[in-house]
Amino acid sequence: MKSLSILLSGLAFVAHGYAAQPLLSPQELQAKLSDPRVRVIDIRDPKSFAADHIPGAVNAPYGQWRGPASSPGELPPLPKLTQLVQSLGLTPAVHAVVVSSGADATDFGASARVYWSLKVLGLKELSVLNGGVKAWSGAKLPLSKDAVTVTASNYEPTLDTSLIATTQEVAQRIKAGDSVLIDARPEAFFNGEVRAPAAKVPGTLPGAVNMRHDKWFADGSSMFVPESQARQIAASSPIDPAKETVSFCNTGHWAATNWFAMSEVLGQKNVKLYPGSMAEWSRDPNLPMDNVPSRVTQLVIDAKMWADKTFK
Image 1 (tube, one colour):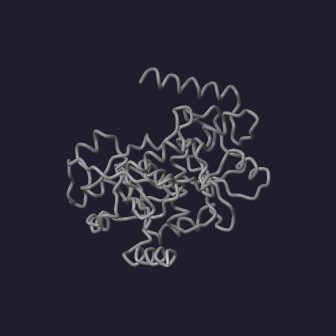
Image 2: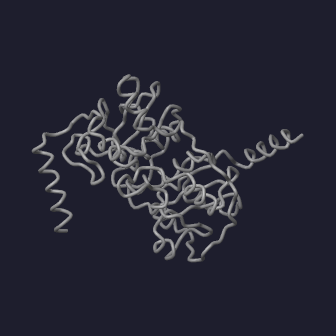
């Protein structure tokens, strides 16, 4: 009888409009706000959130979902993530909608990364507000300054490692040559002309192909394209749905957009995100890399980074 009760509860959940769509328009989200099972998670900084936010939203700034400064792409420890999702009142029965500022395509990566983190923690009813708060405001929908208190949950997540590519696994995939490694960074990073502050060496993973994270957006827009257009973009890209795919970048931020596009929008089943990405990979001098410039060029790159930081 208990099993039957669980099954009926699950069927009732689906009947009320779930499973969730990965992308919601502002109008689609507004229609769901009266549903107590919907939780809007605003990942902007506390000051921006306090100024105005979607009614009923709770604040969980993006930095809480990231690793240390030395390797921002790392997942925080499971106890910390557990405390965070419990404080937001999240359970598998709650539809979590991740909302960022909507400033640009890079900002979308924050929403995609938090969405991925929640899915890694075993949550399935997930969406991203397409265009973030910028799109919500542009649609002339109401904003609020009211603080919201939610009842903490007792959900105990476990990590879904099928979504995570580790450094060891990536090294094995490179050696076997049986995967597509997709670098989400702009061409200058891929070509080894610049490096991220968290990376030790410029360059990319051996055999990687370059597909910029912002290919999924109209020029100058923070709105993810419709699914039909996303399929056209994928068809003319290095994506191979038949192969295991690893999405990476500098710190697992831009890569989250490519992961989201392939896994959630296009429905590809064999996509992993390498959260540590080049910041983690480049720390080990014994790991191979492509497009690494000469030592002299690396020193020039380092000097330019130092000058830019010092004289800003």
